[in-house]
Length: 213
Image (cartoon, rainbow, N blue to C red; front, side, top):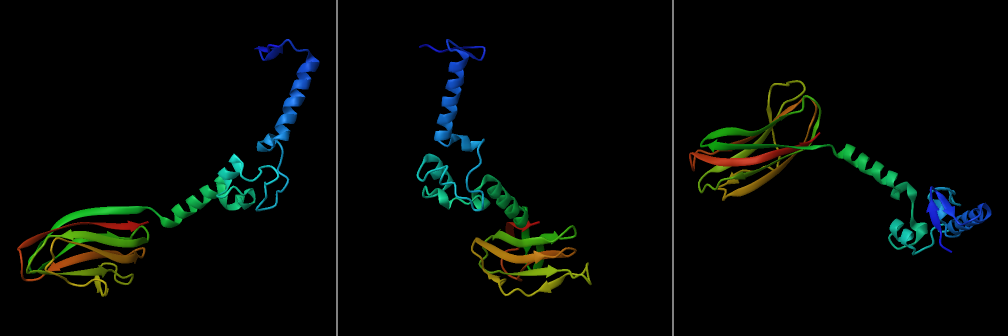
């Protein structure tokens, strides 16, 4: 028999036949657990919930939910879309936003320059780091130092001793990187590079300062 749908009705069937078709369709949905998608609650509602009764192992949906197609491995507390979104939001909030400041400068023989400076007047800056490229110079030595202010002396920069920062002797087109830690709220920081009384009159220095806030 040919079924023709017109204006949301099925021609050629009596009201009783239509009702029977609906019952059969509903029974088929229930028999295949499709009703559990948006109508019928799952049997196990206690975390982490086991949906094996509704989603048999190794079905397509079971493999979408779990790594090995074992439905009982699914834990909605960590693997649901909301749980994943919450975890990403939490990580993003903790990690903060990384900002980058670029600068290009020239060093001068027997003098100190400040290629990078940062203040934390608006809030703590975390994971402060400087990376730069320095021209080759067969005779000069470059000394890198970090200077910070203190709460008691907010306008006075005091040099800090950081063992990881050693003198750069006769660089050969070198790349250098230093991790400076956190800069507490209200303080300021300067990264300085001093060239010895030798070598080229000037040398190119270019790099970036990065931090999280």
